[in-house]
Image 1 (cartoon, rainbow, N blue to C red):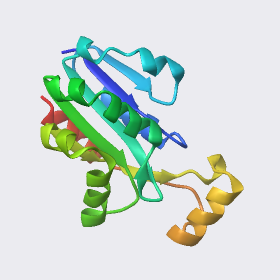
Image 2 (image 1 turned 90 degrees about the vertical axis):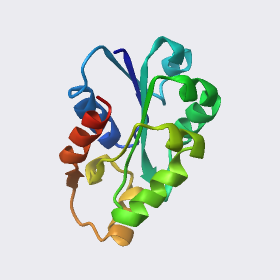
Image 3 (image 1 turned 135 degrees about the vertical axis):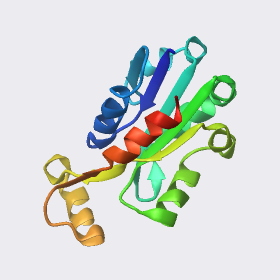
Amino acid sequence: MKTLLAYASKHGTTRKAAEKLAGQLEGEVKIINLKERASRNVRIEDYERVIVGGSIHIGKIQKSVRKFCQANLEKLLEVKQLGLFICCAEEKEKALEQMENAFPAELLEKAAAKGLFGHEFNLEKMSFISRAMIKKVAGVEKSESKIKDENIKQFAEDLV
């Protein structure tokens, strides 16, 4: 099965999660970063399965992910299999709420798999302002990685 895995990442966490996921999927997988210009030329109709993901910052997913979903809504609803995921620091109900706010309701309803892939705080890659905000809001003093490999594995299994 040909798979398109489209994502956006601010500090690299979502890219890492997307690559881990791609390694667990069978068939041909094309990974595209929605922040890159070349992503505008992607033909969704060339894929049987499409997976879209991004990270949550201040409660919202990246603009490039929102634009991609809106611009391709009809095509995404027609793919054989759809998967949606987010990387976020929230847990349980708050994380599910962020998932619901990240994607259009029609896509959430269509999705065969929805994933909450955890988060990383890579302080070295953040700007001074971002680092100060994370330290204050999340109480983080040093970089940490809490990518949920088990959730990524389950997501891949849900798409089989």
